[in-house]
Amino acid sequence: MSPQYSLHVLFIAGTRPEVIKLAPVLKAFALKDGVRVELCAAGQHKELLEQAFADFALSPEYRLDVMQPGQSLASLSGRLFHAFDRLLNDVQPDWVVVQGDTTSTMTAALCAFYKKIKVAHVEAGLRSHSLGAPFPEELNRRVTGIVADLHFAPTPRAQANLLQEGTPAERIKVTGNTVVDALRWIEKSCKDTNTLPRAIQELLQSGKRIVLVTGHRRESFGEGFKAISTAIRRLADQHVNTVFVYPVHLNPNVRKPVEELLAGHERILLLEPLSYKAFITLMKVCTLILTDSGGVQEEAPSLGKPVLLMREVTERPEGIEAGTTKLVGVDADQIEKEVSTLLDSPEALVAMTSVANPFGDGQASERIVAAIIEYKP
Ligand code: UD1
Ligand code: UDP
Image (cartoon, rainbow, N blue to C red; front, side):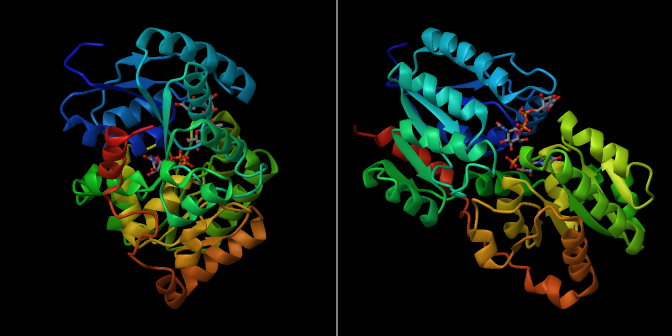
């Protein structure tokens, strides 16, 4: 390492949400002298990863090319282990910074551990307490936590989970979730709906209400996605002033059932994944959100949008306790009933609307950077 640097930090981002949640931490690090900060595009995602880098004007120093269509978890993990092993041999950073619970996160953390490189885990300590959901993310996050030197817990509950597992208190910092930092950063440029795809602009001009839909969880593949799609089609039949806008994830296990069951309906708009700026603009103008996403659950309270969460369990119960998120499972009848209740009752909708965000205050990145720089083993 060049002598002008006292610290060398390597960030790893393999999927869209990791980029979104690490971008503000990279930005905060860029203001510090004496720290060499580099970014590795781990390549678990391809198009979604590049789209997210473009959203935050990021240019990774290293790129791994591991994604394969319809990849299995074991084959993806194998390719990532090999690629990180070589990368860390070459780069030899002091710290590896990983985010969340993806396969990229878990494999990078383990490879760093094998080489005795320090690991900082952003968004540590979330637990559903079920290895079955989110699958396999609950395992990934726990494994990463076992080897992490610093744990950045977004909330006091995440901190409590780590303490209960025996993580030393001095290794845990409660920071808030960096997604709130990212949202605040991008939100400033999301006032203008002209950045939205033309079809959405026309919907807004015609006075239609929008239900924003996203979904991609592995535990819902198969029957789950059939049920979700069935519910959306029935809801679109019933609610003539509402359009269901769904930017569809690139995973073929999602695209196939969604396109087969939802394409061609006049009140269902299937879109390609949106830029972060367009997606946040859409969140701001929609009436409610139907999703299984982790990040969307954390962003919605800042924008005062109710979330109906298509999961059986969540590792982010703070939104449910705050009253802005409701678990609706992946049962077609239940989803149909809960969405209809909110669309038909202004009171029910208002009751789930709050602009207090239990997940963070927008200052998480600064706290994370300070803790890494000040770390004493
Ligand atoms: C992964 C993460 C999940 C995260 C989600 C964010 C794991 C185990 N899962 O989901 O935690 O919430 O990303 O979106 O780490 N594909 C493309 N282009 C892309 C991205 C995906 O074509 O840019 C297709 C490919 O066929 C790929 C498939 O989607 O094989 C699945 O990608 P993968 O990263 O394995 O997705 P998930 O595990 O579903
Ligand atoms: N998002 C986006 N464009 C889209 C859909 C989602 O930029 O078309 C953003 C969203 O705001 C959130 C993140 O992507 O920050 C969520 O990613 P995803 O649902 O893929 O993963 P998860 O959060 O469930 O891990």
